[in-house]
Structure formats: structure tokens, C-alpha cells
Length: 426
Image (cartoon, rainbow, N blue to C red):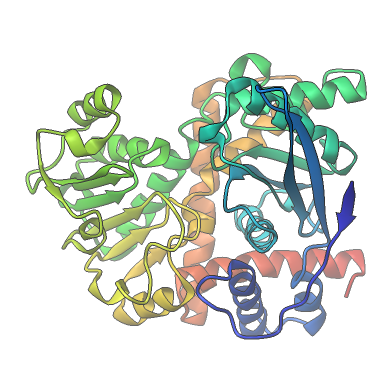
């Protein structure tokens, strides 16, 4: 069973309501650009939100029903684009907010997409591979009429991966009766995935760090950094920064944190993580409180884990000159204001971690053309996109004397409003 849901919120944003925060950020940027009131009126709610019930036969023979969502914010620039997350705390407000942020992220990068997002309330860590496959296929069956290469293109997100995307693509193709690789991105290479996709978020983030460092007069070969969250993005960022001469002095993951003032060797830490499962067991540094990773006196801070880790409570203690948001939503609304007042430059998530969706776009293009590019070409195109987006964001922020986050929103909304006018929506 599927229902269309819509709600309206006019009150001030709270730190724990991402939907209200997304609305407030869009409204603020619309006001700064002096856009027509209709722009915010159209963008303040997703165009469509689908809620679905997914019955899954579990390994014990019992049937369990899971709740899933898909939000499509706007298609003014093209089909919707955004990941699917499997998590116990997935909820409607979060999915709506994430679809709105995807609209902004795609527009900042100049991608021909609107924002989409999906999610299922479940705990993948407690499910077998078979149960996860049945849930993935059930989700696609429930939303099949809602998605498609020219309508809405999902991708991996929290606790979903390339294998899950393969199952989802396969299920959608079965429903259509022919192979449709372009319906989903983040797939395995053998099924039409793009080379360079796995490390794209980290690669894109480092391109923005290099650009920002140049504006700040920060010599990366003499700089220090701390990385909060040493997963796929965080570990790859560590590797790439090390190659530029940056000394990574602290890292953390869900198991704990370690610090070494002389720098943490990437290869040694990688081996430790592979063999023990956590950076906390690394012998080349001392254990510290994971919270300290955020407040160390380093040049660059990279939050690369969960949302809402930089808050009003700790923002005043942050000493980094540059914060690069490799994670989605790591800084709360109030904390962002504090960092801006302190003169700390924040490369916002909608720009810093947009490498992933950019290479997802490249994957979609390759699928539609049935022609695939070598990794060098993918990385070259990614670098061009990230540098151009950073420069446009930086120029907008300087012109209007606002933060890079607000500059990014303004770049995005300027494009979206222009498309709305051309379509006759305003």
C-alpha cells in the first residue's frame, strides 16, 4: 500500500529537526538573492513523498513488514537523484530534508538533477544476507512505478552498498522486462558501475580542500589535520591528504580515537583497521576521547561520520582554520553560525562531499550511452566539476559577504529559480 504524504512547518528550526533546518536554509538563501516568493513556496515541501509497506519473509519463516519512504523534492532541473538508507532511525522528516539537500547539492555542481532520497526503517546489522536481498527487492517492487532513469535514480547511502544496488537494479529490470542499468547508480563495475565511484566522495572533498587552502594561504605541505570518522570517505581522505604532505594527527571511528602529534601513517593504520576492525587498536598513537578529535589545534578538521557532531555545545572549542564536511549534516544550524562568527571557513557538505553524486551522474551518463570511461577520464571530469563548483561558491560568498554554505545555497537556488522562470513556473 502506498500513500502520498505532505506536511507544512512554519515554526523556527530546532537542532534535531532536519526538515525544518532545510526549509530555513533555503528560505534564507532565497531572501539573500531577493528571489520571487514563489521560489521558496515551491521548494519548501517535496513535490512527492511516498510511504510504502514492505512484507519480507524472514529466515525463520515469519513475515515481517518494514516501512519505507521515497521523497522527490523537485524535478525542475531534471530527474530526481539520491540515495537509499537502511537504518533503525529512518523517518519521514529526515528523508524529506535529505531530498531537499540533494536538490541543492546537484544544482551547486551543475548536475541536471533534482533531489531525491529514500529509506527503510530496519537494522541491517541484525539481518542475514538473504533477508537484506528480499528487503531490497521488496522496496523496489513497492516504488517501481515511482522511479526510473528519466524520473528518479536511487543510489547507496547509509548501510546500503553496491551489492544491494545490484539486487535493486535486477528487480527493476525484471519488472520492466529488459535490462535497465541506468535506474540506479553505485552499482558494481560488472553491472555498469563507474570506475572511480568508490573513492569519489574523498577525491572530491580533497579537491575542495586544495582550493580552499589556496584562498586561505594555507601551505598543505606543512598543515595538520584530524579526521572524525575513518570509514570509506575518511580513510581515503587520509590517504590523499598524506600524498599532499598534510600531517594527519588524529583519527576516530565507532570504536574510539587515536592521536600522534608526529602524524599517523596511513598504511600502518589501514593494516590495523583491516586486522582489528577499529583504529582504536593502533599502536602508533595514544588513545584519546573521540570528542577531542573535533577540538584539537589543527589546520584542517574533517568530520566524515554522522550528522550533528558539531553542535552549539562544542563549536566554540573548535580550533581548526578549515572544516571540510565529508559527512552529511555534521554541523548543526546553531553551530554553523558560531563557526562563521569565529572566522572558521567551512566547506559545506553540499559541496565538500558532492564527489559521490557527481560520479553517480557520470555512471548514469555512461549507462545511458552504453559507453564506459577509463578511471583517468572519470577523475579528470570530477576534478573539473569540483573546482568549478568551489570557485562559483567562493565568488558568490565573497560577493554577498556570506559563508561558503550560504554561498553554495545561493549558487544552487539562482540556477533553480532561472529554470523555474524558463519553464513558466513563476
